[in-house]
Length: 173
Image (tube, rainbow, N blue to C red; front, side, top):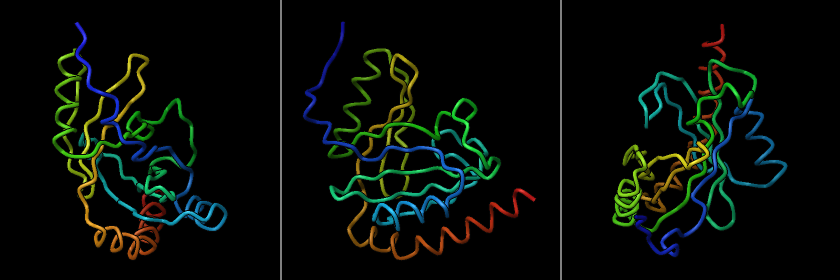
């Protein structure tokens, strides 16, 4: 028996994440060509949801409605070949309105036999991860940051991006 929750709890797109060849090149295109704001850059050695060792840079570009398009630049790879990309590097994240709704979504998924990873606290959003029947990785995310946090992230994003470019270059040597 299927347990359902009203679809109105899914507020919209939080972010969609894709691979990119080079974080700096991607930032130039999305900022200079598309006019999107580089809103946040996260550089990590481990994947927060799986703890897999995979040095990467995660860039977020803000859209007018407040949602983001995000990219992963992996230190070990300079080309984008989706067939060999780890599944966590490409997923669809859908926004929900609160941690309570996030947890209710987790309960519904689990009640329907879906394995759920999380919640994972990313420091500015909290997320759960799961797969659809076709094997696509999906995420429900709720924002846990303040407007001051986002302004701080945007203010340091270029510095974080430059540090990532140096780290990736050193890693590829």
